[in-house]
Length: 318
Image 1 (spheres, rainbow, N blue to C red):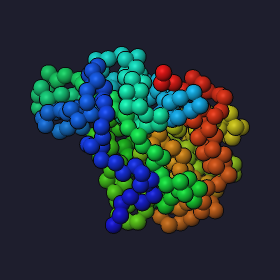
Image 2: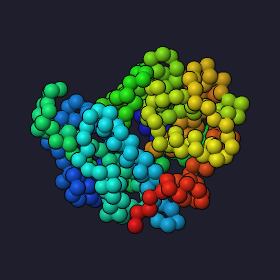
Image 3: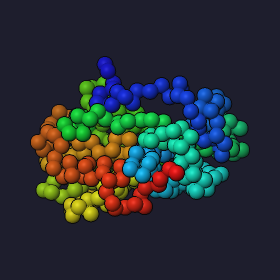
Image 4: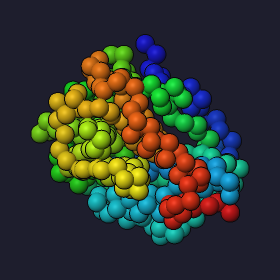
């Protein structure tokens, strides 16, 4: 079965064949030379931290959206797992800007990651060096344009999220195995995304997105007991306040979702994607609702610098 679903097919890029540069441990290396040893500890055990960041083309040039927030979260994740990043936040921020400029990107997806090297093996290895990299490449919208209006079909996953576990809520490499198997389960059954519950039976998040519903004109989203503190989630809540849309953070049940007027996912890669059904049960009108549309439109205007607000969210690449 085709597992692409409503993924924008322009995103299907063989990253190993890209020509460009990558920032690696403070140096600029050729894309094809940015390699690590097969015994790299993170490759075996998954203990590393990363972010997904986007740069958008604005009238003032390429602008990285909420870069400082992403980098702060990268360092918070590292602190959670006692990984000591050998660079400052300023150096990591500068690397983002440098790599966008060197690769001549007007828009792009940026992947910073910090990981352990190959100096030791096993859970007790304590002589490991920490390495950092920042790569960027052209990556159009994650979803097909029609999905932004019609919405996507979502499956309630059989996989559950841990509750109130700081490591599970950090952006740690190994955590995303859970996301991959949940998404694959959904795709194999003909859905386009997965929605996961937490261990207590409440709504957690998507495979790689935060989750929102709208009920009686109120925007509702789960707390962070079993989900990532998403940068896009924060943005949506801030925009809702600016637009005088009432919002609440609360525990949500499957019944809440099925009785909602609207539902959508948010994330740096996914941006804002409406949900039309859960387990083939229609949500609301079965397409993007008016509040989702307003938030989605405002979000795109914000990231592209069309709105003259929240200028501190933008870092121009100069």
